[in-house]
Amino acid sequence: MSGLPTREAGEVFGPRMTLFADVLSVGLATAVACLPLLTVPAALSTACAVLRGAGQDQPVTAGRYFALLRRRLRVGDLVAGAVALAGLLLLAADLALARTGLPGAPLFAVAAAVIGGCAALVGLRACGRPESLTDWRAAVRGAGRDAVADVGGSGLVLLAVATAALCAWMLLPLACLAPGPLALALTAVDVRRSAARLLARPTPAPERLGGTARP
Image 1 (spheres, rainbow, N blue to C red):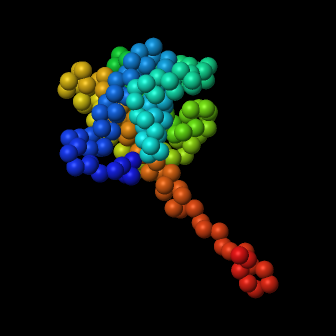
Image 2: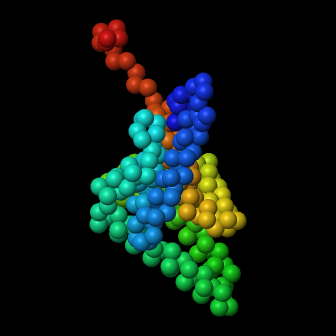
């Protein structure tokens, strides 16, 4: 995305403003796709894939978003949505149970919130990974490793979620647009992590044959 051309003379809006508008349109499309609830992981993953394509000069439009979503929806996506929804309901039930005044309820509530937050973090980072388009298990495994190894990126994801929630709380209609910036943040964090892995990869030493480097 950093390779976007600069604004030409006489152009009212530059490419960055255009990308911002595209992010909002993708966010609105994602909000619509999330309405069945079971499609939430697939909808967010598709938004990340569409936004990732901006760095490859691919169109970032709601039309491309829905076209990609129709092609990739499969049983695994619905299963991922069911698991996410079940986890959310379980967390809500645990927190409600903790408010009943049972012995050790405060500690139980804190533990449940921490576990739920970690699970949500891994799930969100999995949506930002390219593997989520075809293999959720691989995406979740990679997201789990990244969540531990890339603490800074995990912090950025949590900050993005908090910002989206705050915007939706301040002005409810913004909740329909929040998935776009959130998907952009998830994509940027994964791209940042991928770049760090490439930089950390050791450069293979040149093979030598007879005391001279092989060309």
